[in-house]
Image (cartoon, rainbow over all chains, first blue to last red; front, top):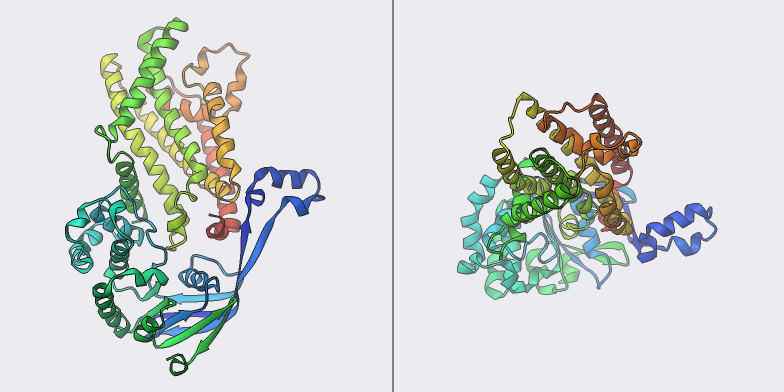
Amino acid sequence: MTELSFHHVTLRYPVFNSRGMSLRNQLVRIATGGTIEHDAGHTTVVTALKDVSFCLQNGDAVGLVGHNGSGKSTLLRTMAGIYPPAEGCVRRVGKVATVLELGAGLEPELSGYDNIINLGMMQGMSLKEAKALTPDIEAFTELGDFLQLPVRTYSSGMTMRLMFAVATAVTPEILLIDEMFSTGDAGFQEKSLARLRKLIASAQIFVFASHNRELIKTYCNRIFCLEHGNLTEISYETFA
Amino acid sequence: MLINNAIYLAWADTKARYKRSVLGPFWLTLGNLIGVVGLSLVWGILLKEDMSTFVPSVTIGMITWQLVAGCIADGPTTFVRQANMIRNVAIPRGFFVLRGLFRQIINLLHNLVIVVGVVWYYDISLSSQTLLSCVGLILVLLNLYWVMYLLGILGARFRDVEFLVHAFLPLLFFISPVIFRADRLPRDIYLIWLNPLSYFIEVVRAPFLNHMPEPKTYAVMSGLLVVGGAITMLIGKLKGRQLAFWI
């Protein structure tokens, strides 16, 4: 039973400027007994998610909408367990795969093949498993001989193909994808749509952040709207 | 599983770093060979040492130092370097430390070629005591794990740590018994034993040169492991969760 639920989750994250990150200022703060604390500890705290609650279960495909900076990526990272919530609790049952940032974990000097293995192993596969999946990934990406070239020569669309193929090679129970998914060309989008349909059909959870309404309408069955860290659910009919 | 993947990725890191060079990772060996030969010649002549004991001592000293200094120098960037991975996949923190540590171990393995060469050239007799060097090495590696972990957390939160560490490393080299042997110093330079890195080197080198390390060497190494490991675990427990926000 796959499940992803948030119970009154509030997430704050500290943004350090160069002064806040500096050891000298922390030391000065100790040495001066906090009198120049205002000057020393310049840390801005951003409340990125405010009292967010929801419950996702098998078969839920969520489209995440909201303007730039509304907290979509932060929400995805909190879902994945990368960011710890300041208040509330996150319940996550199931294996998570993420495609959040283009090029994350890729080694530009190594070939596409080497990177497939690297990415797979970073997601916790063994070398054997990663090698066994390579033909499947090879076929799915349609990158052909480009897989022998260093990844630094790839366009963003090609990088996207590679990352998406690896993330979905083993059907994850929870798949979280951020915006850049839309960089693929028409052919690839069609192909990934088919794969996602299969994924959703096998009763898993899928969360997809995007500004592209058409994509969200085709892929998703629930819509979450984020505004300044507040989450509201819109009915699919209203959205469409 | 975690360890296997860390080893593989450490090797991938090493390959990537030397990807377009002709000699590849053997630059590691060559670079240190040049260092060892140079240091042996210069200091051997300056200190009027017997080369047949001085060269093996410098070799083991240098190679152990490279391992220790490499970990300390890389420590503060352990997590920062992997920032985009940490922000994208939930992986246990220890994985990144292991990956960094294994990179240094791969360097060490390349350098072993030099040790083999020196053993063969000076016809050093290896005894069962040499095995104690391996025990020493394991103690060193266990200690380096927490050192990297701790420096990694500190380096992610306070970006000055990296530069601070780099500023002090050359100084540490001179007050650690890398080129010289601690037992050759006049008694009043006992100060050398206040430097914890002296034990890191002695615990590996002394058995190799058929000197039994003093019991205090093992005591200090184990003590450091327990105390340092505990401090690191505590800081990791208290602050480790925040790491994704810092990088």
